[in-house]
Image 1 (tube, rainbow, N blue to C red):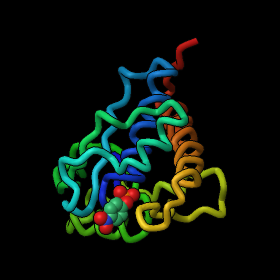
Image 2: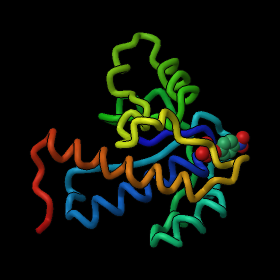
Image 3: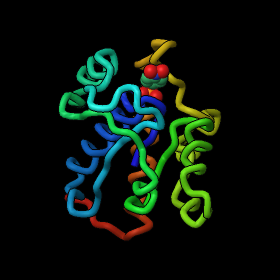
Image 4: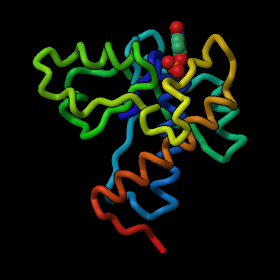
Length: 157
Ligand code: 4NP
C-alpha cells in the first residue's frame, strides 16, 4: 500500500509504476498493490491531471484509479505500507495505537537507491511532477527487487 496525503499525486503514481513493473516481470500472482491518502478531500476522484499527463508520457496509465482514504483496517490488510513523507508516516503510525503493526510501515524513500532522498516532494503545490516521477520510478524498482529477493520469486524470462 502506497500512501501520501491526498492520494491524487504521489501514491497513485507509485501504484501505477509498481503494477506496471509487476506485469512486465510476470509477477501478478504474487502482488496486490493499492494506494491511499491520509486525507479524505479527494476521495472518489481520479489522480491529478498533471500527474496523469506526466505518467502517460512514460506509458503509465493512471486513469482507472480513484482516490481512497487510508483506514486502520488497511494496516492489517497489507504486508507493507510505504509513506511518501515523514508527516504521512507519522499519521499512519497513529492509526495503530497498539504499535503491533508498526513494523509493516516504512518511509518509501528509505528504499530509494539515492541516499540523499529522504522524502518524495509533494508536487501538488510545487509542480515538480517530472522529478517526482524519477524518484518514484527508481524507488519502486528497488522495492520490487527487494521483495523478489526476500520471497525468492521467479521473474518471467
Ligand atoms: P499527494 O498530493 O499527497 O501526493 O496526493 C497532494 C494532493 C492534494 C493535497 C495535498 C497534497 N491537498 O491539500 O488537497
